[in-house]
Length: 374
Image (cartoon, rainbow, N blue to C red; front, top):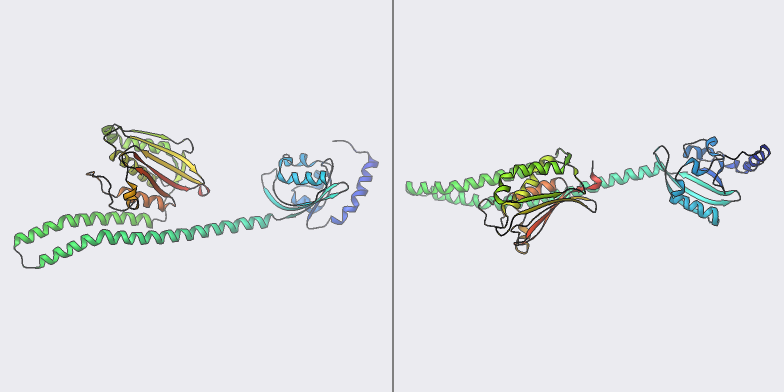
C-alpha cells in the first residue's frame, strides 16, 4: 500500500471531519474515493460490514471484499462514481464468511468520490422469507386438502360402483333361497353365490389396500439409487423377460438419486414394467425403456414400451380406474394402474399416459418438485 506522508495524512483527517456528523447515525455511511478506497466509514457501517474502521480505511473495496466488482450493486456504484448519477439500490451481499446480508443503499456523488448511505434490512428480509415459506406451506396444505377431498369423492364413487352390483346379486339370490324350492335348486343358488362372494372379497381387499395408502401419513422416505432398484426389479421379472424375449434399458444420466418411498417406488415400477411385458405385441420383440429427467421443477420418470398400446380416444377416462381392462388378457384384473396412481398421488405426484393402439405407451410419473428435495 502506498505510504501517505504525515502532513498529507493530517490534511485528510481534517477533511474527514466534515463527515463526523454521521459518526453516530443508525444507518451506515461510507465514502469511497475515486481509487475505490474507503475514505470515511462510521461505526454503523463497520457493524453492517462485519469489520472495523482500521480494516477499512485506506483499503480498496476489492481488497476487503474480493469479487465485489462483479456484483450488480457495484455497477450502480460505478455509474455514480463516473457519471455522477445518484441511485437507490436494494443489495443482497455475500460476506467472506459465507453469511448473507440485505441492504437498502442510497448512492450520492461527493467531491471525494461517492457517499453510500445503507440501511440493514437483513432481519426484515429473513422475516419476509419465513412468512413466504409459511404461506407456501399453507397453500400446499390447502391444495392437499382439496386434492384429498377430490380423492375421497372419487373413492366413494369407486366403492359405490364396485360393491353395488355384487351386493344386489347376493340380495336377489338370498330372496330366491327364501322361497320354496327343491334342495337341488337351493344348492344351485348357493353355488351361484360362491363366485360373487369371491369377487366381493377380492374387491374389498383391494379397496382396503387403497384406503391404507390414502390414510398413511407416515410414509418413510429415503435416498434411492434408481439404477440399483431398477436392476433388482429386472432380476425379479427375469422369468417373464426371458419368456417374451423382452429387453429393458434405462437412462438415469440426468438424475439417478431421489428421495422417495422405496416400498412405493418398487410397487410403481414393478406394476408398470410387468404391464409392459404382459401387454407386449406378438408382432415384435418387446422393448422397454426407462428415463429420468427434470421437467420445469419436477423430477420425472418415463416408462416407454412398444406393446399393444391403449386406445385413449375410447378409454382415456378409465385408464387408472379400478377393474378397467383394455385387452383380452386372461390375467388382466384392472388393479395395477389403479393402485399405482394412488401411490404416486399419495406422495404429491401425478401419473399420465400417452398411448396409441398397436404402437406402444409412455407412462410419465411426476415424482415431486425439486424445491421439496430433502
